[in-house]
Length: 265
Image (cartoon, rainbow, N blue to C red):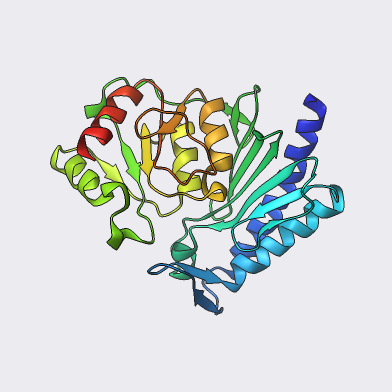
């Protein structure tokens, strides 16, 4: 099983780097941009092109596998051996506006469990990887979450949904309440990177509502394998297919952060 996971991870890394190089070449060039459902929910020809490259490469190596990708949805036979969950360009709005903060995210699911995750930031050549039970790595070096135990001294991150005007989970009030208490808060615009930044110790915690499975499948495993914790806001188990509010932390501030989010909500 271990060798099998490692082979999945190797292919995922190759696919992510290839797609990332393609995105880097297209960054700050002229390209087509279209809108999806929601306000300022963009898709570019590079989202579509990167996704095609990833799926095509994986199919060459695992023709029997299934896919769940942001742009093309669920494809493949129902009895697939394993499923690849893909975000070809997490941070499309950043990419479309020339902001160099975006990533490729690929996770492998088997028996309804994420067993491998890869996130690649092509503009900084940062590769985050994890395999179930084997730890998390940044450019090949093992990484861990922070030791911060005090929520008030933590650096936190968040993101906003495309339907922000509808205020799902009262996220506007939650955001406002956290700001009023003086917590330092960052907003990168790429959830996969936010999760990896928690895993690598750059952030102590991250929270967001209504993330898609492609946004968080790889990052969730990477956080957990780095020693962190990922749940719903109320500390209940988080399912990547649920679209429920997500909380990811170093584990040590998790209960306090969860209580703050639930109280604010």
